[in-house]
Amino acid sequence: EVQLVQSGAEVKKPGESLTISCKGSGYNFTNYWIAWVRQMPGKGLEWMGIIYLPDSETRYSPSFQGQVTLSADKSISTAYLQWSSLKASDTAIHYCARITVAAPNTFDSWGQGTLITVSS
Amino acid sequence: SYVLSQPPSVSVAPGQTARISCGGNNIGSKSVQWYQQRPGQAPVLVIYADADRPSGIPERFSGSNSGNTATLTIDRVEVGDEAGYYCQVWDITSVPVFGEGTELTVL
Image (tube, rainbow over all chains, first blue to last red):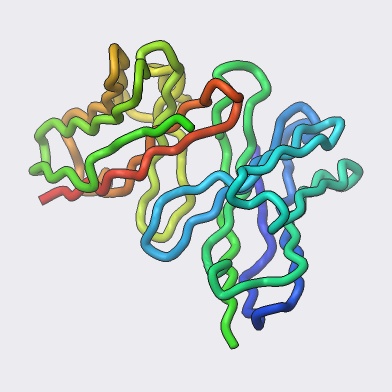
């Protein structure tokens, strides 16, 4: 069974750093891409970035370029989303999702989401 | 950048047919995916490549795409279908674009 399991909820203060994780299982991790998607409270889905495995090349949405960093450790089938300085506006649920490499490149499996709350 | 437009909400009685639209410039030339997000849950792929269903998705869910509008159709709507529905395509620069989402209410 394909699974993406994300790390648990976090409560942080503005200016703090944070890394959350997404561990894949039940499939060959490097045969797919991993995307990160933000959902602010009561709002829709926003694409943040994609990490293209196996070479770990990254592409960021212009809205998130310079705000977050994507990475992956293929040896443990885990992708990461990192902030160096959180803002209150980062309060949201963040999902990782597997993207099929073959067209039409679907987000065919999603993690359960990680709620990040940033508040002073 | 490419923009997808969805109605904020659609309401339908149980057993009836729900149709959710997704508008975009010449969207008929693109491959459209649809995701269902039940309250408090992660999104789930329900339609890909305009009209194909992943395994495990009921036949009640179908999709079409032509001209400037793609449509998700849910036949014999059930209370469990109450959810947010998002359309998605890839734009010309190979980045994903999501619609704003449509809340389906089952009356």
